Image 1: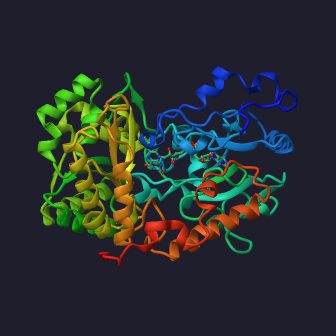
Image 2: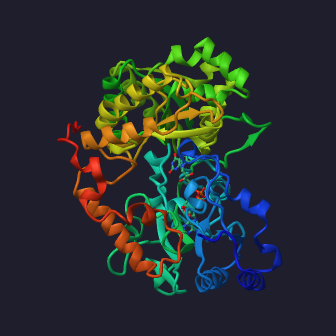
Image 3: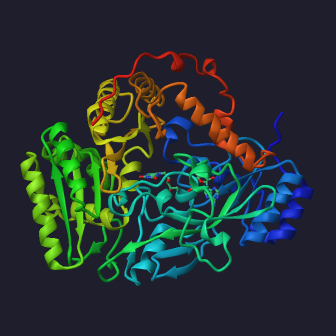
Length: 540
Ligand SMILES: Cc1cc2nc3c(=O)[nH]c(=O)nc-3n(C[C@H](O)[C@H](O)[C@H](O)COP(=O)(O)OP(=O)(O)OC[C@H]3O[C@@H](n4cnc5c(N)ncnc54)[C@H](O)[C@@H]3O)c2cc1C
């Protein structure tokens, strides 16, 4: 049977290395690190595998030594930053969690070259506050200012509303420092050359960033990333100032910055408008929330939530969801030109654009503060039931495929499950979406909520159905980098597992991707998924 405790000798060795207070195997503490009310909690449940110990290293050398001690004692290691994703917890037995909160440095702000050097526990909110003092801004992924940039840049994916103007976290990743399980400290990109700085993640030689990450990162399965250079972008204003009390605070006006809410009568018009807005390179922040997300973000109790649902204030105003679009300009003339162009596009595609203040001051603060620093998505995620997931397909795709395939699949699944009272009625089209780099590409997710204590609620069926339809239609599932078509996808998975085996040959990391995919060696292992029919994709 798998052991669920750590030996006294191993614990002693960790404590001697990191300090008495920085290692714990206290049962209460282990429970804290096993509870994850997060993305996909409806699938995995609230209680996850218990680790055997928690270790808090504070330097690269301590990370090296902790890995060495764990290896010697047959324990696996799981790096853990802000832990907004369940893969930051133990995914198998005999795991020591490396909580990296003592490594929270913003080590350098290089204003001239527009980048920062950060440690694992520097959150995107902390980074943004500091860089704005230097006329810079940074992408805050949709998980919000409380999540760390290094983890999304190296180990997961980092999309959000500012992906349009400031790209995704993984694309902002410059130089990288990795402590491998053999104890080596690897530098990728420019930091590999002494005194070159952290300005570049590629070369000399072929880029390793793509290799280590693949499409969506390896979720902590490769070693511990201890530093990165992260790209910043211009911010033309004073630092963002915000006063008042949570959750809404009160953010004032920012010069040369405007925000709008736009919606369209059908998906065709919405697609046309999105292509044109992207191509015009107008916007700073651009993301879609369904009416349900407004109810969840703007209400402060379940009673208030219920009354918003009953009033239909958002469901009647934009039943097909609404885009928050912001423009950050360097001068009044740029602002005016961009705003006029946006107004023209929205009108020409049959849309309606309003000042979000027209939805009330709370709703205004929701969209304004989300646009600047990603504040409210996670609030929406946990109302009204506390547990949420996203239905598949969950694609990165062209705008056409997102609207003409993905969203329709999600709408149908949700309508059916809401009618059966198997999930909470957070409105069938509660899709969240954002677009990348002023291009034709973006991602979509369809959140749903369940209440674990409601006997009729079902947690996995919609997820499985979405995945099956995704495979049948040959569209990317769960952010896979390519159409879900065998054997192409299998080749990708096998390569990612091979790379993981190269970097961590002794399997010292608690690698979720390897445990999930490592057993898939040929198409037959995939059962029904491998035999689904011909694709029916729409290409935009
Ligand atoms: C409500 C909600 C909304 C979300 N929305 C988005 C979204 O819009 N876009 C998005 O991209 N993501 C989103 N996420 C997913 C996730 O929270 C983010 O990707 C987030 O950036 C993860 O950061 P973190 O610091 O919490 O990482 P963690 O959860 O701590 O870690 C994530 C993974 O990276 C590994 N890891 C962490 N640090 C290191 C390290 N130093 N070295 C090696 N491996 C490491 C962990 O083992 C884990 O597998 C959302 C999550 C929630 C709960």
